[in-house]
Image (cartoon, rainbow, N blue to C red; front, side, top):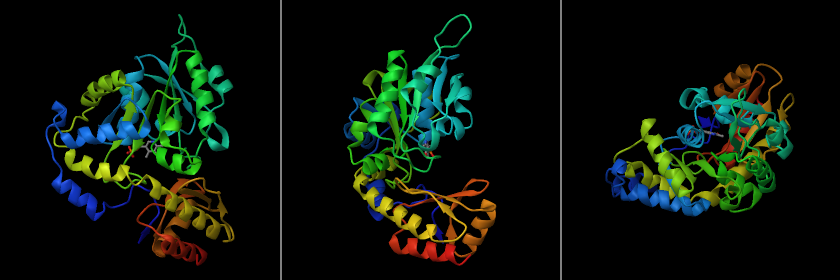
Length: 334
Ligand SMILES: *Cc1c(COP(=O)(O)O)cnc(C)c1O
């Protein structure tokens, strides 16, 4: 079975399995796990922040960030189709007691500075007050769109005009960096904090990173414990994470494979295919997504439902160019 459902389906390499077995470990809740400490230091270095925190998942990293940046009763601004708002079980309200005001970022999910100004509400006797802006890069729901650094910086500056902090959901930060051909630290520079996943295109079995200023990460560490994310001998899973962090340039291959896939699927009658920025290809199916997915699965290829008539293909290190050709052939035969 060829699995294009997500870049989270990758299995750890032999080197990662060996690294896990041989990891130097301790109790990370006591800050005593040298492998986790090394991962956090290396992650902060790569994204250019003072500090970083290892967390079990991207969702937890985002939710810890929201909780740490806000007070109960605040409002935050985010894009209408953002992961934080749409795919995290209403965690903004559940974990932080915060209300979300959504902004439509159009086809590419980028927020204009004017939209941030318009969305901001000052705290007064009637209104909650905006304390956080959340942005996403690459934008998952829009099809892995890589939002240019200047656009993120402009939205962040608008937020800063109102003393509003900015968190970047960079689950696929390094896909954005590869597509924009800039170091990840350049994308992160205009924002206060960033979350990125080790367990997606980078190929680690588990884990994400929340990075930002030292004082923020210190408080985020308390919130991680509160949310049940304090882990003990976590070096076992952080060791593959350290290897994953060095897989950043490999993402270009995923992007080339996504392009190959899009070009092949586009030639098939009835399919409407996005031009991928990164490793995600959205396909309009001209009929129920389920019908297309079931037929494709019968041919040995998996993709995921993204809308009533839309499916998503994701490329990753467990599918290569010839797998892409096989998938195109399978879709052609339906
Ligand atoms: C995958 C993803 C997350 C959450 O990561 P998990 O590790 O699956 O919890 C957050 N934001 C975006 C944009 C994602 O694509």
